[in-house]
Image 1: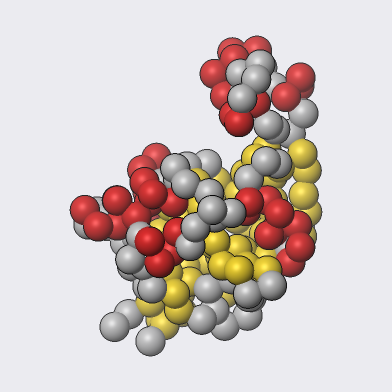
Image 2 (image 1 turned 90 degrees about the vertical axis):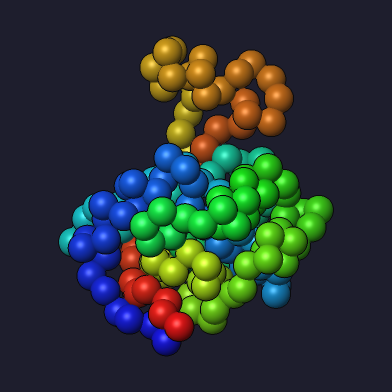
Length: 176
């Protein structure tokens, strides 16, 4: 069962959960992936509710969102259990190109109502989003202090992020 909510009533839950990680799910050609994100914002752009997610261009999630233009954001309510924290850690350290992270983490998908990517039962606070705007963040335009910290000269973390502004089409809490 899903209890529909106003996403702004739960923005605080999202912001509190982000430092520990929440999951962004994507799907294309029946391949579902969950990626841990620690950055994101909830707001209003163009008169609609938006979740802005940031994904590096070298991530599998980037490929999937580019194909479909859709994602879900899934967050725990309150303090996540040990199992949820382990699942978030796994989804943030492995690639969906190499394994089914959702199955490996012991998570269960719940069919979304509007978009293709599913929700995650164990992270019940869910925003279903469709991309309305994207923008690659040019590393050379980011302050040198932040660029040094988040974009080393080489390696997998040197790839820039793309900001995906997803219109929140549906927001709910999955309840048993």
